[in-house]
Amino acid sequence: MAYATAKDGAKLYYKDWGKGRPVVLMHGWPLTGDTFDRMGMELAGNGYRTIIPDRRGFGRSDKTWDGNDYDTYANDVNAILDDAGISEKIAIVGFSMGGGEVARFQSRFPGRSAAAVLISSVVPHVAKSDENPNGVPEDALQEITQSLKDDHQGFFEGFFDEFLGLDEDKDAVSEGVRRDTFRQAMQASIRNILASADAWATTNFLPDLENFDSPTLVIHGTKDKTVPIDATSRVVAEKLPNAELIEYEGSPHAVLATDQDRVIDDVKGFLDKAMGQQSAIPLSATETV
Image 1 (cartoon, helix red, strand yellow):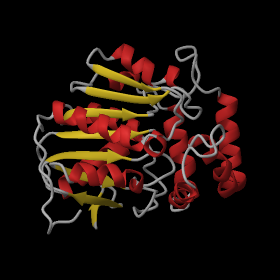
Image 2 (image 1 turned 120 degrees about the vertical axis):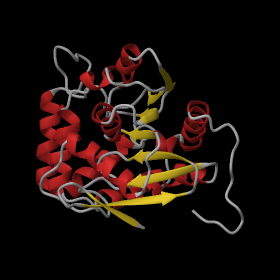
Image 3 (image 1 turned 90 degrees about the vertical axis):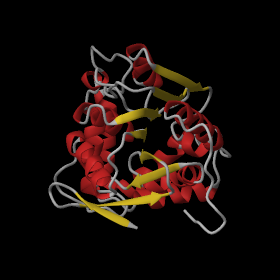
Image 4 (image 1 turned 90 degrees about the horizontal axis):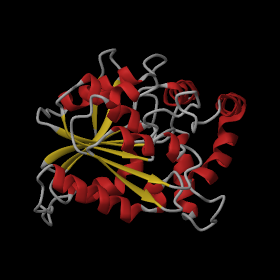
């Protein structure tokens, strides 16, 4: 295990698996880098050095009071790259809230990315507005906030049914996946849960899209009730001429769980092409991730 030190002294946990072209996998809310373990193993076993952080406030990283904003989150990614000694261009992948880190990293560190992937991403804007008529209404966001303040453990018990698609298909994922999703959420502090929710719900990433200068893959389920596809990924596809949008028909928000093999295949295929990683470099029998 490794810990980087952020500008404000916060300790940031990350996994560093494999060798090869570097790729960073940023998790969603309110989870941890463990969300990406399966994809991380596949990439690390096929020629990629895979960096999987826990965002500040989540998982094994420090539970800071301040710094729950996307400028800080992007700076934290850069601090992890420095700690890992990575100076070459990276691929950066973000699920849900993690898509915001992908977007803000492009703005704050131009020319640093060779490829970008947005999965069920909050980019460019979640909240409903005149500019974003398909977004989530303000009263719905306020209801979530109040429920979290009242009983965040109880809120997540119900929230993850919709998140994982269990509200429509009781067999969408196993009970083990559901329990593990809840386990990850309970590693975050309520302060960070609330403050980061405000960040992903209200931050407008439209200006950040102007700084995307690398090939971009966008993946989103058409039945995502958590982050509506019409307000996010379809807008990204319209704004970015170099973006490839793959819609997963009928899939919910947590495609990393419900469509795991397909997501891994799509992401790896895209990265192989975007980063010139055509030939796989598997781990030897004596190496482990």
